[in-house]
Length: 308
Ligand SMILES: [Fe+2]
Image (cartoon, rainbow, N blue to C red; front, side, top):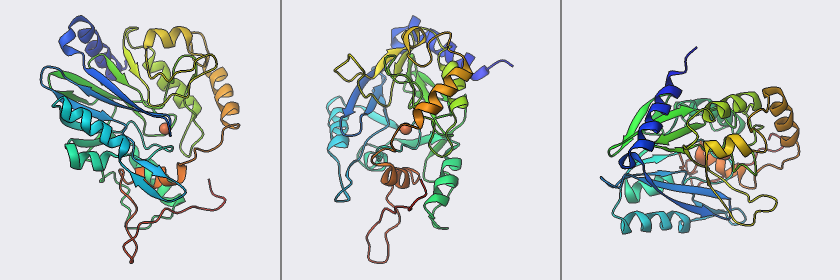
């Protein structure tokens, strides 16, 4: 069956490779506390911008939030006089809280995520017994993207690809020649994202990755995380399809689906849950909003015992 979304993405990337005016400028902010890369992409002609995967700083011991990471993004946007049109989330993150609602107040932009966020809301709504006040229809977001849906950043065309596996709802947002691929691939020397969270699936992840790796070799890939790697002492978050195809330690050319699934499944069994999974999931499933305050006006994060 032809993959028309992938074909459209390939055409868009080829056009951007041929014409520099269709390539976004990308600036990355790296949060060393959660190993998260927040990207700001913009069209240099119109200054239209997108913020991808922002971070709200959170201290788990005290339950306090702060905005230092998000303020750095605001300062950059103001300094460069960018017009934020999108706050994009590649998925509902389990390792950091999103600052998208706060950034939306400061800078504007439509908040968007993959349409299957409703499945994530269903699963975690049950786990956290979130009750009827918690809508599981994605209505916390301004736009829900399906596979192959297009949008734009000023004059630069963009397309969303559904790349499930790490979670059911993961999206890759491809703006010109730059693909923001969330938690699918990491740097070639580190490998791939885990697939063992509720709703995750190593086989789906492999197929999503194969799709991404069939984009043109020159496609710029921007990752959501980096953890360094043996022999590499600096953080990195940008690579290309060609480099991943040739060198990715988990999924380079020639690695078969079953071998990947076996590797991923056994490796995931050795991983601890992310330090911030409890607050992250409860906040991010609500589009970055805190749980509804209780009758004393305070919001609380729940911890289900023996459930995750
Ligand atoms: Fe993630």
